[in-house]
Amino acid sequence: QVQLVESGGDLVQPGGSLRLSCAASGSIFMIYDVGWYRQAPGKQRELVAIIGSGGSTNYADSVKGRFTISRDNAKNTVYLQMNSLNPEDAAVYYCNARWGSKYDFWGQGTQVTVSS
Image (cartoon, rainbow, N blue to C red; front, side, top):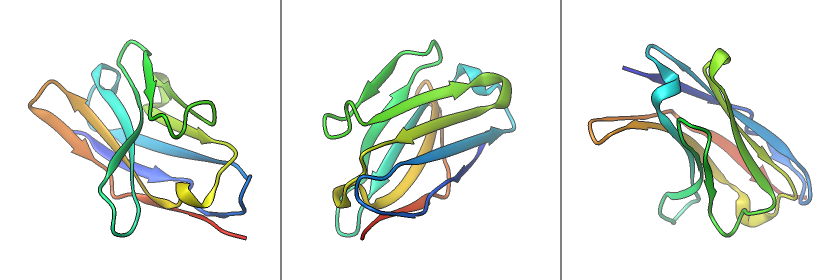
């Protein structure tokens, strides 16, 4: 069992930056692939970025070059550094930890608002 707690969401102006954190507890976090997803009102949840247990990363085209996902296994935490934010990035951001097809955990989400 893995418990995930996201933090770092806030109101930011266009062009600004935020760093989201996903803190995990309860299991061997380092073996999990961890992704950040987001869901805006009226839209489907979409993958933003993912980091594998070995450190490999993948990003949605819409955030490439602006967002960076990283993990600190010693702290059981995955981060999402978001730069050059625009209104289209506004959403609830969720952390997901997955191992195989059987283990799949979600956090409660953190709100990111981009507005002047």
